[in-house]
Amino acid sequence: MSGYRPAHLVNEHYLTTGEHQYYSHDNILDLGEEVLGTITFISAEHYPNCLWVGKIIAFQEGIRVVGYAKIMKIYNNILKRQEYKKITFLDLFEQTKLIYLKILYTFYVVKMRFLDKEN
Image (cartoon, rainbow, N blue to C red):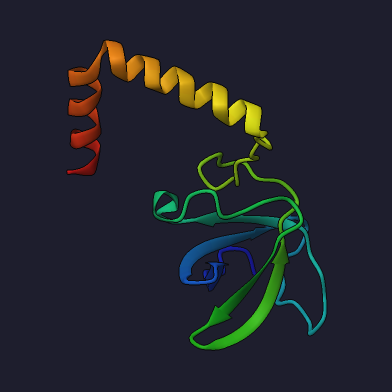
């Protein structure tokens, strides 16, 4: 059954196609059967940072959910959710102070970069 291409709900608002490749299983799976394999998603740049190890995603044909996949390993770093460091008030104060100093010394350059990012 390798080569199967259902839709996958990679986040709560985005379905994408992915091709399944199963390890050591060539036949159609029976109801409730589990198998190890890989899923290769298309257009990963449109839904970055949406997967993490342990996440369970549904896969479906049309509106009918036909199975679930538990993420065991992520090979494409675009899809991997980034871990965020806890920021303390002191960290935030130090970062704000540095940004303020940069703005004082390079006001026009910073202003231009900021406008470029927004437009």
